[in-house]
Image (cartoon, rainbow, N blue to C red):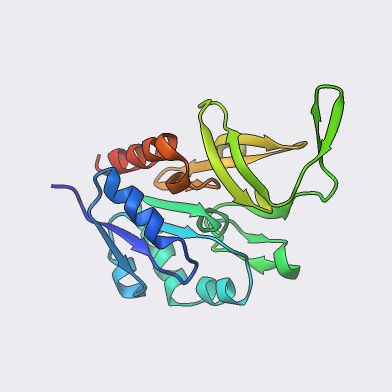
Amino acid sequence: MARELTLVDAGLGNLASVERALIQVGSATQITDDPDKVATSRIVVFPGQGAFGKHTDQLVSGAMGEALRMVIQRGDPFLGICLGMQLLFEGSEEGGGHRGLGVLSGKCRRFPDEMTAAEGDRVRKLKIPHMGWNEVQPSGEHYYFVHSYYVDAGKSDDVMWSTTYGDVTFAAAVRRENIFGCQFHPEKSQQAGLRFLRAFLLGSRQ
């Protein structure tokens, strides 16, 4: 029998669509905002959208941050999605600078304002946030991204997949032992996103 997965409600939004995607790939899922329940969970998915700020400061320094670190340090499977992945790192430049959980080395940096892309003999100015489909390497799959800040990983070995927007190449997905993270939204990435979630679940059951 599959172990129940815990979907963390940290007030960062994006729960319903992630829950639907997890159910679609066969996960028994509970949603909780209780740090005590998170701390005793055996598989954890931490989704998020939005920005680093006072709310994430409270999360990182409070009971929920401690519960998330406990799950990770215990070696149980953990997946951070979008802002949930960024919070695994040491911090972000956003809003003048804010701390992350610090379980992976690296920082979140903002895309430069003046980025361009060549299209034939024309040059197009790129918008921020980076919003839309991008191919990740080395998998060759396309996933859906929505973000203005990207992870500049401190250790290249932690980067499982990368992608490029303008002239910035950044971590699209990370992995270190039991820790997984993705900058893209698997729940918005159609069949590729479901394949990613299914692979995480299959690996978590080993």
